[in-house]
Length: 377
Image (tube, rainbow, N blue to C red):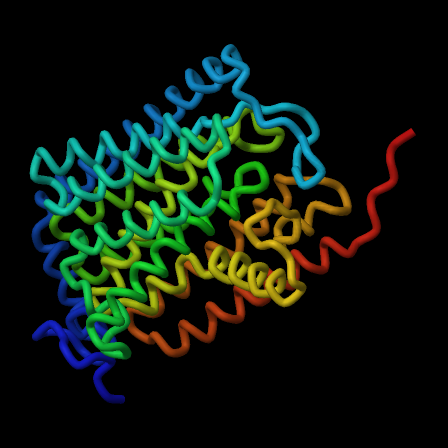
């Protein structure tokens, strides 16, 4: 099997990441031999996770109360998956907690220096998205801003030009990265259509990145702290957003979370672990992209709200958001396992991940075709 790209890090093997099959056991053995250092690192990770989770949970509660008092509500419409007005914009607290944590880590030299730029760009996205939550901006200027922010965000990718591992010339690689990143932050918004789904997805991606980062060595430089903070911030919001949701994330949460998660995934892909980076968000990518292509084929106006995602159709029989979210969680756990497997065996892992994503989409589609549950007398 030949190299996956023309320009590689000197110690990388064919699939990237410092000859993972040989290097990972040696790295783990090295860490076991340095138990005090590993213990301090684990304490820092756990403290970060607990503090970020608590801050996100508390901030989301305060934000819910404020939004309700200000009557900033998402009112049910024909394409909604909820039946009563719910406060929207709780993602302001989640985004603020995450980005302030990342800024603190960067200032303390516990995260890559590029984190500062990412935080500034994510704050700008959050401001624009909050404005959209309360005023409903046109789609065109929002998309143009997303593309601009993704283009500037290339500066935060040390391996920019090599995300696609030599399959494209560097200029085309960077252009494709911008489009992919902009699509990813938008699909994060599109997929945030039922209770609990984005917190579940973001938590799974964050912890999957933590596992892969710890195994491959890219966790050095604060990467592990960043991904753990991402997962903890999302999971801190989950108690408020689990069905029946007391607050919605809103664009101010979903778009910056998609941008932040996209950056961490692109960092992983640029280091050669593109298979793991693809597998972790594969369900979101598959559902959003297939739905978009199907709507284009039907001649629909794809910028308008709809209820045709696989996860939305799965609600048809009983409106049980929790059950659908748990099925998605189960699929994501399988994708995390496939992403870890991809460190050593990328090709079988990709096949496994494709099978898991396909099975999940089929499960959701079949669930949506079940006869509606009769109303109780």
